[in-house]
Length: 251
Image 1: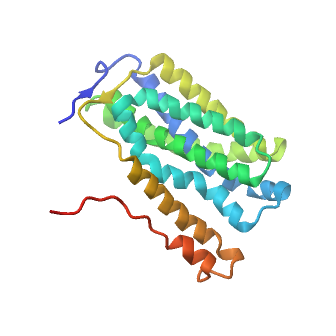
Image 2: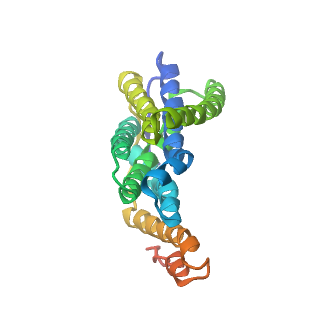
Image 3: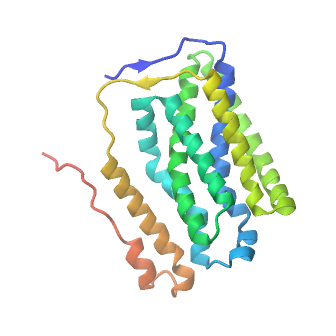
């Protein structure tokens, strides 16, 4: 059984750590869905196809789903606070690149990279929160966490629409940058490191094959509007692609 390195129980900074986690998770949620709210403005500038719009909107969530288990394991191995900060820094870098993206293809590539960094932040923020609070205070902390996430989600949509209509679609990424910088400051200043010991291994091949399978499915479905419907070869060929996962044979 692996041993878990815990920070001191009821550390004075635990409520600030809660604030950092509450900021980090909405940052990922906003970052993942931000393009969906500014699609008309992107269409007006770049005139992308429907398939390209579908990929731009879904690729980061796709990469998040494919790599999220790996992100949690990396945090256990190398430190949850450290990997959360690396993920946040990666999201900030990708967001700056998105603000200056010259074409839809660049947007898709950057969004894919962005989703991988989101897979580091999303599971580790909650893991850090669970460690920062003991069993007695944890329900209260989780209640505040959940309620604040809902409130921030509502206000973020209003902020994105305001920025989009007043300063243009590229300005909406300033919201993600602000949340990311605040997360980095709070975790660097007040967060404590924690990790799981023991002999754990990361199945990189399985993660990559899972990502390839999910990408082919979503890419195939995104071709439906311009390729003659869901039963066309352009849809079925990638959508039915299934990489062979290296599972050990029973017995």
